[in-house]
Picture 1 (cartoon, rainbow, N blue to C red):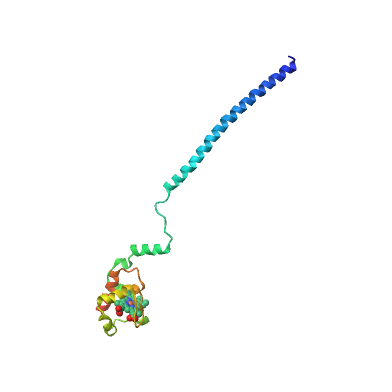
Picture 2: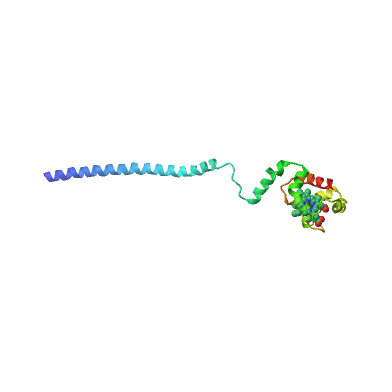
Amino acid sequence: MSDQDSIFFRNFSILVVVLILFTIVLAVGSSIFQDKLVKNLEDRKDRSTIQASIAPAAKVNTDPNAIIAVAEVTEIPFDGSTDGELIYTNVCTACHGTGAGGAPKLEASAWKDRLSKGPEAILANAIKGFTGNSGLMPAKGGRTDLTDEQVKAAVEFMTGSL
Ligand code: HEC
């Protein structure tokens, strides 16, 4: 072998070794990469389970009707008081104090015919609302958040002060 040949042979051997090493590096590298990729995908799958498990227990309900429904259940006006005078003064007097819209004032003459219907009938009209000959009585005087007991107390106060 000439010197040149042996130099070539050495270089060639080095090249072959380098290529073999490079192949090994690629093979090992790609298998590591693949493991990571698979793990990543699994993580992503896990993430949706994690997200579900850390999701807030309750969501704020932005449906306005639902909010009103909750308010009706949880917040009884006047701290739930069944003081008929208090409720009359705050709610009913707007019409019944002045006779606005044809509302009967607290005068015996304005109530004589009404009382003959019986206390249950006028209470039911006050709770459900009704339109008679003189005007419109809104359900619970427009305060539908009042309980039936509170309206009853107000009606009793009204009919008791004639
Ligand atoms: C927006 C005005 C208004 C408010 C507020 C109001 N009323 Fe009336 N109410 C009326 C009118 C008008 C009538 C008469 C309707 C008719 O006979 O035509 C009436 C009638 C009534 C009657 C007689 C029902 C019957 O069968 O004759 C009762 C009882 C009554 N209201 C109770 C109440 C009570 C209790 C409140 C408060 C919680 C209240 N009202 C608030 C307008 C009102």
